[in-house]
Image 1 (cartoon, rainbow over the protein chains, first blue to last red):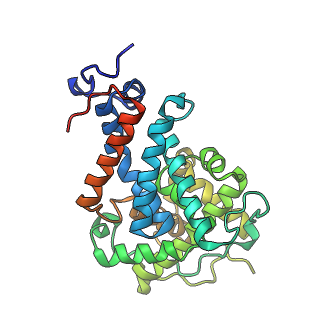
Image 2 (image 1 turned 120 degrees about the vertical axis):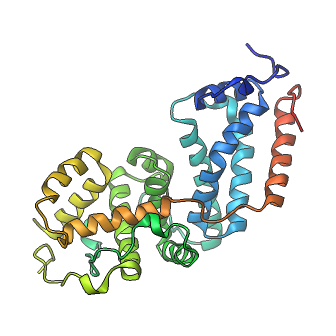
Image 3 (image 1 turned 90 degrees about the vertical axis):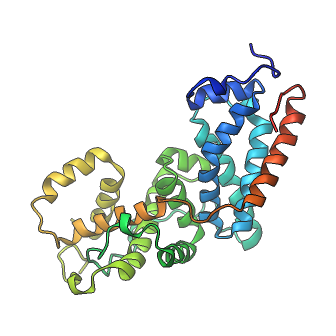
Length: 218
Length: 85
């Protein structure tokens, strides 16, 4: 077993996440720093997308990695380390949301959604530009910020975990304490609401599909 | 197919790579203005945009302070750790 005072093994070449975690658990700060460098952009993005405030996002990032240090020896590899860290970050972000809202916005059990309440797509058209042509557009970045901030928190959190950070349905359900079925329904609602907003903004008006297509409810 | 069933199916198609491959097989039969195809395509592009890049750049000043706080915490956790400044 390595002593905490050993020369870091991180500098000797590329290492994978689980090896870095092992080294960090033995006190290797360089290994921990590598993990922070890898995960910090994701933690910051997750917190910013959930909370919409840079100050809050930075607070979440700091609290998250301090907690990771405290609990790193309890990590047993039952999930990816990155998933474990994102779960910690999500819990801090939800705590801030709850404090600010003073409401049970993310109630864990009593708020089962259904597919029947999901609005059908209205503005259907192809986009005028591809995402790769748009990612550096500041006006669009501002629009994305606004669009996601207008989503109800319970839908926004699911969208961030599932579609932005790539947690699977089970991991998302466990993180939020809701059923997998509810994850799927909330995710669909979030996707459709965001799609509607972005397609109204980026869609080609001249190629808009009329609303009499046969899949629409009568 | 009801509208609710269709929405569930679209959700599944976006999530599942195997389903996506199957969908793309039959999607070739659609012309480019097919509404279902477009909705799925719009959603996939929406996700791509939200996944791309960082929403904002973390200030250097904050990062320096952040690193200092982590270093102090690490020393508390592992008192014998060697930390390069």
